[in-house]
Length: 426
Image (cartoon, rainbow, N blue to C red; front, side, top):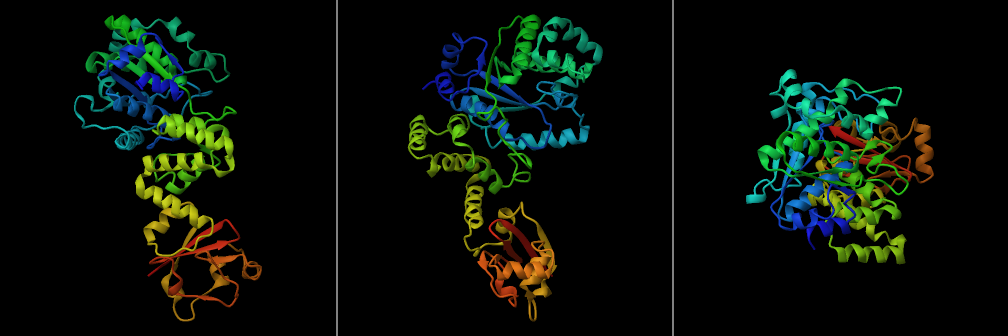
């Protein structure tokens, strides 16, 4: 299956500048394309997976991807889809964010594979060379204001109470110039991005035609939305990040394994590299017995392995078993720390486990699972207290070093889902 046909099957094409020309043009291979990522954080989130994987798919089809980090445009902020002005980031924060995103790109793209090696660029490297007057003369004169005013991202803000500042109004010029620059200096002829970027994509095509007389192309993919129109990759706690420092492998795995039946087929197509035969087999299995949740397990496995590696996947799966009540044993501090990265923890002196040890009631209070010894007593007598997922039924139980789950940690649980870590330090 050629790349365009595959993207069609995976429902990854929302809009193109030339549906008839692009399939044959891409089939010849060796094209250079780019997608841009603004560094609003030091990590990317689940919504960024679609354009990231789009670049990866093109590279595996023999094309050369450019991953562009917007060190300059990030100073402005894209007004697209925003109802009010973005908070501007400091230069130090932007540098940190650019470095974090650049490192993440290496998980998706091959930067050392010959003719179609990926390229990682930062638009700050060329936009910083402009003075204000030079930019107005060399770029601004080629950009009709009526074209900018016609863009949905600008029109929606102009009609709002918040309005739009000249700073954000200028964002489109900067992104458009990126495309023209990449065309001139790297032979880039195709820009890909989310469907909300269509106005910026076509602005770049128009600018390159005016400045260089060159014909460029654009392709957008659908945004990652649930069936009811909400952005995927959002939880009550916030975004689902690709960095393990922001979203643990367990939390990442759990997000995808809990995707709704109505959305999982779309996710398997858009976010994994599973072959068509397997995806359609999962569709059939889901239609016959959705309760088995085979599609969700496969989705969670593929994405967690992609983002967190085989070790991260194993940790997430082990954590899932533990959170469903499996006894906790044969783990070290690092593994327990990863599995329980999102639960409350408290450090105690290791001598609390010496002598007679730490009474279970005191341990429940120290861990924050009970407000008082009386409340802890009721929890124990009602069968709701656990140490390392083993039920404790004796209120006189004294915990000692033999009950550590790892070198220094002990896992306490109240009821089915309330966990806490106690770490005993010298």
